[in-house]
Image (cartoon, rainbow over all chains, first blue to last red; front, top):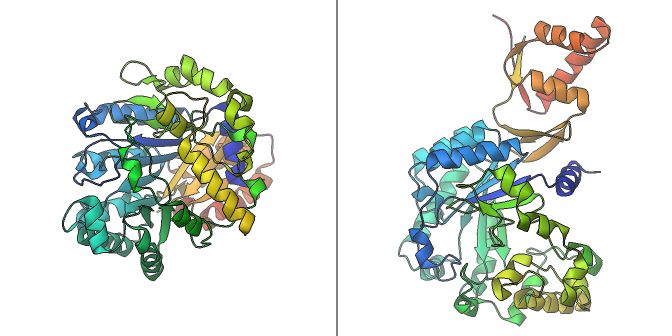
Length: 338
Length: 89
């Protein structure tokens, strides 16, 4: 058995929070059209430096190894480098998600020194496209300079890009530029509703035919057999089992996209919330057949049902997600025609 | 010879075994039970002879056999970039 499978299985079975995505702030200096964070969230009171460090110590003692810091834009926090350094002192495997506009040479040098496993930078396309999506002039140039600088400091960089109607025709360019720079790239074909359920940004989703062409592009998605897709077993993913999301105000979620609140770290310890909250226990005890509609769906072999999307779209954790259903339809057609 | 964990690693002990990531290449390494015990003992800088003494007090093993196996194990950890070694001054 591969080491990655072994550690995944053990932590999944024992509910050890091996993977954590920690949102440190909702604040951002860009105004990306597809952002899932509602404007009023930016006013929420963020965890202090000491609160964050305390949570990191708790995550460590519960077995968390893989940690992602994300936002908002994490580099807007004055204490961000201090927090990163502390996380590395606690021997987390650390990744940083950023829009790349606030990183200067000294920061790159510092990140390189403390040793991070990766920095994932959002780049949406060529200059005109990128600036249009971020609604911020010169953002492209800043990001592009950052990417080159991170490479210079031998920091593993990944270009990360959600695909939308607005940037669909730039994805070939993004692949070419990533290859030229010798770095990885990641595309996400899904735009999700805002954290408050607002679906207005779904208008940016790519069309079915664009999605089919993405799904058949081996440079983006490795062709998988239908049987390697979902099974009824995974109608609930690893969120809340060995995966945890933490919000800027200390809420513990199964995943930052699955806003089923287990409790708040300002009121209770991580251990208490993770192992004793009614919601956490309830979620872990759900069986595939509890998702009645999806369990009996003829497309479930092609579906990667996301319970977070279901909850966001419907307010319930049992039903189906229109977005996941659409993806399953397209996957089925693509795989059937392959 | 002083032995100590390398700086560019991430690690946890889960179910009695050490899982170690080398952050430069994101490669995951796994140690067995005894390897994990040694891993714990070398978290802070430790002299080879002290390490031998500690292990001899914990395991029923002949001193020479332990030294030979330990040298091999330490060499393996070094090759994988998991530890750093300094010569005694």
